[in-house]
Amino acid sequence: MSRRGKSAVMLGADCLALPLCVELAMLMRSSPLAPLSATLLLSAVSAAALAMSDLYGAVLRYLEQRMLARAAFGMAIAVLCIHLLTLDQATHYPAGALVTYWFVALAYLVASRVAVCSLLQRLSGPPPQAREAVAIYGAGDAGARLAQAMRADSRYSPICFFDEKHGRAPHTIAGLRVLPPQQLAETVAAASISLIVIALPDISGERLGAVLRMVRTSGVSVKFLHGLLDLADHAWRRQAPRSASFEFPLEQLLGRPPVPPDSALFGRCVRARSVLVTGAGGSIGSELCRQIASLGPRRLHLLDHCEFSLYTIRQELMAQWPQLQLRAHLGSVCNERLLDRIMQEDSIDTIYHAAAYKHVNLVETNVVEGLRNNVLGARNVARIADKYLVETCVLVSSDKAVRPSTIMGASKRLSELVFQAAAQTAARDGGRTVFSMVRFGNVLGSSGSVVPLFRRQLQQGGPLTVTDAGMERYFMLIPEAAQLVIQAGAMAEGGEVFVLDMGRPIRIVDLARSMIALAGLTEKTAQYPHGDIEIQYVGLVPGEKLQEELLTEQDAVPSEHPRILRMKERALPPALLEQYIELLLVACDTNDRWLIEAMLKTIMSEFTPQTGAPAGADEALRAMAQLAQTS
Image (cartoon, rainbow, N blue to C red):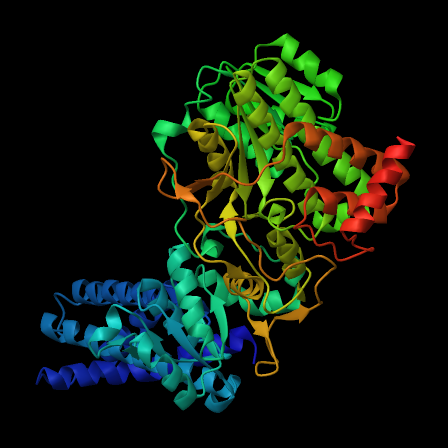
């Protein structure tokens, strides 16, 4: 039936029902029945008022309270008009009878529309048993409105709420029982619930992690609701996932509260000082620049070999801090002459060395360039820091430097050894520079992080690729990483390694599931084949570990910051390390992976390469002799 035909049917029904409402109101007031002409007049004016309030233009299936309120107001105007028109006539209605009529007519309008709306939804939607049984975690305002919205949706059948606070005493919200989380597993099984929606928009990352871990033990799919628009958008996302937005606070993935900086430490090596940041265009380097700029340095020097990255961070800093004294230098830390020119241009007080190749797989297949960039860069920075009497020099390292199994990890451990040797030399010769190192876990949202990869895969409709179900990593936020570097320089005494207490490690598959849930989607599994995104396991790449470590020794001690640990690790004599590095560079000139790995194994006995032919002690000595003869 056309829209105009449906409106005509509704108007005809009201024209028949409204006169009955008039007579019923008169009977309820024990008044004599009104003349037919007066009854028809009141009914006609009422119908006209309803038409003017656009009641007949509304779609019954989606009729809302605001439209009914407009109809009630229109009816009140109609009743008032009839009262004034018949005030001096014999057919005058008593005021009490008109008020009663208004209530009766309004009750009829609400009851008839609700009944028709329910009938249409029942006829057009699937049977109740075909709807998806859903539980809502969070019985607050968002959860209550979600339950109401689900009742009007043909896909979902809300069963109950789970909530830590509201579930302590038995009661209902929006017509649904509120249960404690302890009853989650048995309720899911008893009610055949297949989906749990977390309706806690402002939840912290720590609480979200705990909720997700508990909900997943029930074996059902999980979805996170940022707002009611997510519910309306869910079917569209299934059809066009590439167009969906998957932006959400990274703090919600962390599983712990972020570690705040110590204000007493934060500006000690930066405020009113000249600072150099290498790798300034990278994820960590650019955040370092932002944090440093906010602390009021005398001058900030940026160094990066990528023109676009350097341009981007320079423009951002100039726009946000127009008074900042800024110098941008294009080039590589492997260029010692460039470093000399930068140091001669200004008296640098603090260096944060963040420039390095960090992508494990790329460095693994580009061994020579990875080693030269990371190791030579660290050596050059340490040399110029000592030569030009820099006060503080901090190396940004990685947890992959602990018992390394990849070339990238070995290059970072060798960079640490370079800084440790520089610290020994400075202490022996009375040097001014304080050298220290900072080890990161995986930094959420950085260019090498798994988060951008998962986000792209979500936008493409999946699947999310995870190497192994047992793989887990320590995670931190980009601001946490930058703040750790700055504070480490303030606490360093020379040669220490600083690490952040990042709580317990997070399984990568749990991170993937959290991102699926936070995107408002569901995981596709054998038990839930109608889910949105599948997780696929692709296997470990050579040299990749299931678990990473942050410390090679267990004698870490607290620092001035309660969540930052410090320790001294085994170091090599500076002269011996220098000989090793020279031999390693000769090995790199041969481009022979076996010789390179043999040399790395000699320098770091804990290095366990997974490719090539790892050398034993005798083989390493023969390789060194061969290199010495050719050098």
